[in-house]
Amino acid sequence: MIGQHTSRVAPDGRLLPIMEAEAKPLDLGDVAASPRLHALDGLRAAALLTGVVFHALFAYVMRPGEWAVGTNEPNLWLGWFVHYTHAFRMQLFFLLAGFFAARVVARRGAGAYVRDRVIRIGLVFVVLLYPMKLLINIAWIGAGLASGGLSVASDAAQLSLAAEAIDAIRTEVWPDIRLFHLWFLYILLILSVGFVAVRWAAYRWLPRLSAVIGKAAMRVGSAVCASRLAPLWLALPVLPILARTPRAVLDAPDRGFALEPYALIVYGLSFLLGWVLSRDPKLLRVLAQRGRVFLLLSLVTGSLGFGLDIQRVAGMGLPETHLLAAFANALTLSLAGLGWIGFFFATFSRPSRVMRYLADSSYWVYLAHLPLVVALQGWTADWPLVLGLTTNLAVTFGAALSSYHWLVRATPFGSWLNGRARSL
Image (tube, rainbow, N blue to C red):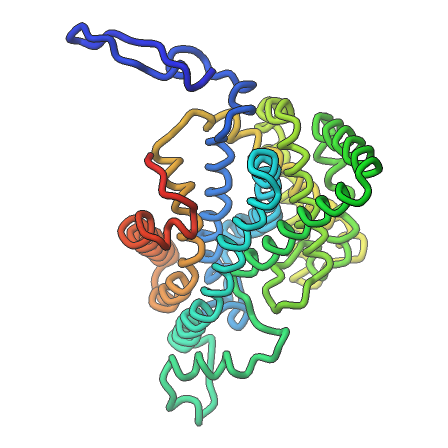
């Protein structure tokens, strides 16, 4: 098992200890039951860090007025990437949140888990929301003015960017408070605390019935996830929800504090699926075997969904194609979610200093990235696509990772975000 040691002979004849994982092929069964799942830590980081790329691409795929900096000639290749990742990225994040929630509750108890979520999710959201809104508004207005995608009234033109940003915040009326990218903290807190609270109350007041229902749900969930048709079965509950949305895909619920039922249902189902996966380690081994196939199929369904979305934008969409687009996007969600879990579990289960560092830093990087991304989009609006995008990503990741390393990681703020500092 990983963690036991053997030895190897150094050039000078000394015996050096090595991890057994270096001495024999990786046992995925042992990995699935180990205290720390490096692969899924890395996948959670990838879901957050891909969000930085996702937002950086908006300037090249969205129309002027839809984003701070837009274009009248959207790039189809980048548009495909945005559509594909948007179909599953945050659902995958909530699935992993449910997975790790079940492990923490089983190991430390529901009370410790709820306290951790309130401190590291809820309190972060409360403290950062308005400072982040101010920074994003400044960047948004500045980028929009610089690129010509935004105009202001003559009386507001004399104001500084900060004054205009503050004025935009003042005009918001509860509950329509723009959450920007921090919406995921709000929804995650509600789902995490709500799910555990309902589960605790059910087992407290209806212990026998809850135990029967819980065991039955776990058996059904495990059977569904182990099936070769798992992506199809998991897509079916999401299909009617996506079919009722204007674009046949779930939009980010970032427009205010009023809970959006469709988003809450889809992210709640993702959270619940993660809980099921955590309770049956053999499912990770099954997904590791099927991950690459699921990923290839997700590229096909993602391309179909993107093609149908282009038809919708061009005014050629029909009710039948809308339903087909919803089905394609629902399949992309399930295929890509399960596929990326299986791929990471099969490929990145060995401990890695780089993966560990990215996993620890990704939370801060995602929290901090958006004002810088938007400001750089305004600065590079007239640059060639490749140069502008490369500059944006290089500066954003460089600044965010540097600030994490020097200002966050070994500080009380870093402990607040990630728990106690851990050595690599």
